[in-house]
Image (cartoon, rainbow, N blue to C red; front, side):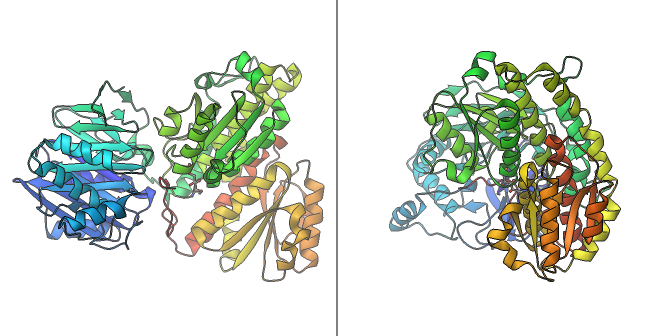
Length: 613
Ligand code: M6R
């Protein structure tokens, strides 16, 4: 989803902005642009397509000066084209804007502005912002006041950066609602703005996060934060620990491949400092979970979108089995429309890699509004989902760049396993032996993941055999049923092959009609409590001529004798098996997409962080 970068300082803004935008490419976009103030004039370069096109444009027609703002656009209002690309300039050419979000009342505002004689040069909602600001400024007020009045007029969840030639030393930023973040980077005699940390990490690690309904006036000398109502805010300065290097591709062809492999390290880090193997206990201090709180919880709603929601489905099994608390998983976009039954003994647990997914944030807000306890499991440190929660668990995975989520799937599986043990322990519903065994099993996780990584060459061979399939059914049962969903999502989002995940037991109620020689069936059949049921599923698929690809436990001769292809995984304790069984499915999807020559890291129509409803 749209990326934003801004720079105020003595250096030329353009290279800083373009580099920053490159670091945000993972969010997905279809056009890009940059604007600087040079000799009291606003100059803009923008084009449809990838950043490389903007780089070409800037090299043919250089852009010097500062401050500057840049943008990668993911089209909402109006086609991806040069005229709709940001930045957008006001009619007098004195103001310029970039924007992330949707101005919900834009038609109304546009009508008003048009009737006053304002000329629109694009189909975007964004353009209303700059014209409104210019109208306010024309009344003789300061740039800051004009910006504030504008921000208060626009409805919806929006992030805005504005510059004006009349006060050319500053950028004014606002966060209105939850349209993704605004991070302000503090430098030496220069300052930065961005929609996400990786864009500015190479320059500074000292950052401020704007909260909803706050604005910032950013100059070379400093950053001044206020609410939209004009109250001064003393912002907290965060120091970011992960470095930009971990956001490079290194030896891998794609970020997705790198991130699949990084899971071994990420899973190790997930355990670090949280698992006391000697005592057989779990520590999750940021969750602020006391025995009293643990005992009064009567229900947990897990809410999330896409891959994060499938991680939540595994979490349901774990928390219900280990902690004996009823858990319901509600897709983020549905939570607020389902009138969930929430009281002060209900937990709303949001899972989100970005921590900025609009639907997940809306679900958290709904949970809060209804008086629930709001928790989150997030990857992006400082994200909204982390900040608005009563307690949180940070995924220790580092930045995830590939649009297809991988390490941000396995980390929350382990986080929820640990959460389940902690809840069970504090509620007194687990005996010491079981608790110690569950905790001890965690020690196996990184090594088990590493052993799957070693099978990549075999998985690539299977990918070659499957590269031309037109569809695939993914079947799983019990705790591995959500892995069927996740495996199918991975395949469809990056290879554009239709894939469906199904609970295996549902096959006979309809989808079995699809199985023939043309429809491969991927069966998750590790040695877990549902193994025998999955064997019978494989038999049923074979009896109908289907090609079977099985995920099976090393040494399982029975599965080997029945399946056409086997993706082997090491034996794992069943409650941790999803962490292992999903890995070959990530790799399979990755290799099929790579063999088909597709843009694995930025699949069509998708954004890394979906900050609109
Ligand atoms: O940042 P989030 O975890 O909240 O994102 C949720 C989904 O948009 C995300 O998992 C999406 O489904 C991925 N493309 C899956 O690979």
